[in-house]
Image 1: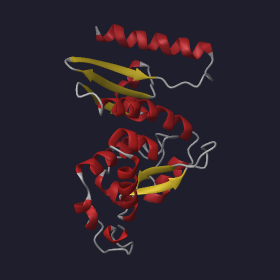
Image 2: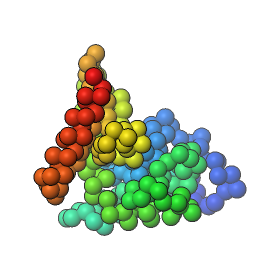
Image 3: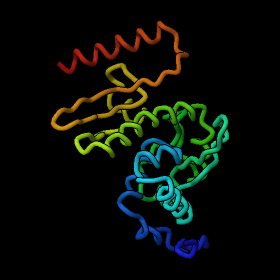
Length: 213
């Protein structure tokens, strides 16, 4: 099995291993470009039929520098791997969002710098919580041929699109079942926001719905 893995030695061609990427790999890279990072558990339930098949693929992708892999040291009671774009993944997704803590920050100097910002983000648990919601939808869609998640936007992407309306959701999606489709904004709150802030958010969303009518 290990003989199928490419060597780790560097190559003069940074795109050498692009041909090894499947359509599923490219979809995963686009998610990492949009959402900074995902856990092994999230990738598995959203994309793979079994944990074994996920582990095999998630062993290959770091070897070809498509993704970077880290141990999540903040997870209580268990150890899990986190995945972010690697050098090859960044080359193929040049418009990736770079800093979850500061939208105005200068672009990272390297892929490692970007990964360090993401893994060291004060929003790490929050980012994973938001992605849990969406990957649960994707996992359900794998079991229901009528269901599909047609859009999954990050906080930065959603704010870029809707910030002028006065809302800053944690994510935005479009969920469809059969011929029925609904768009939604996600607010992921662990019960720490004061009531006044929650009410202000609700009023902002009310203005958005009035504008959309």
